[in-house]
Amino acid sequence: MKKIHLTLINYPSASKAAVYGFTEIIEVTNSVCENLGISTLFSVYACKIEELNSTIETQVVILPPSTSDEFYTKKCLDLNDYLKAMQSKGATLASACVGSFILAHGGFLDDKFCTTHWRLAQQFTECFPRAKLNTNAIIINEGNVITAGGRMAWLDLAVEIISFYCPPTVVSTLSKEMVIDIGHREQKFYRQFIPKCDHGDEMILCVQKHLGEHYSKPTMIPVLAEQFYVSARTLQRRFQHAVGMSVIEYIQKIRLHNACQYLELSKKSVEEIAYAVGYQNVGALRKLFYREYGLSPTDYRKRFTA
Image (cartoon, rainbow, N blue to C red):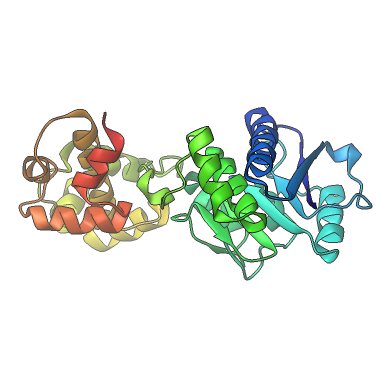
């Protein structure tokens, strides 16, 4: 019997759904292995920070998502020391969602490809410039470090770990038993545009409001700048500094976001939606939409509408 020991860190504010759910999926996996005659047995040891013990054998240390930013935004020396000790013994370090922040605080993601929740991409990049962040991915496996994207990506992480120690028949049976989608997915399928509005530049906030109301109309930078009594160069410089992207990029984001709303909430054709959000050429919408979300408008509608 091959025994695989998993340690789940139940840190302060760790998602209880992930902690208990991970334990449950492992229990189901053990049942599937037994029914299929696979001689692999998983065990899960869920421990709090004060219970960390580097002498307990483990093959994988798992950092679940969090329900608040109280813990993951700060460095925890005790946890870092534990992770370092376990990795030195050959354990794989795995995280879901904001768990990647905990790994990055300890330097475990330096010069490695990794992912976290798409909404936290800018914050993560600013805090950990050495990490190679890719928020399009649901799972990135770097061998001794595995990171998963959004809050529910602990499911994908569990499947990734299970598939490493079990044959494909176990994963396939498990996905049917628990109705888990193990097909190809990317975070960009689910990404939403959330404008940055906490920059403190009142003039740029007014520009953002204007663009939000007139995104479907052609925008000429000199004309827009004249409306706000600044030069085109000043407008573009201040907008880039405040929002983190150019005016044109911002308009494209708003148009694509509204295209998503039309696809999900209306019965308009893709051609009608293209014109409604400001594109005179439906091909332009299709090209930009696929680049942003990794799906065609038609496939997006199929995935996200009943």
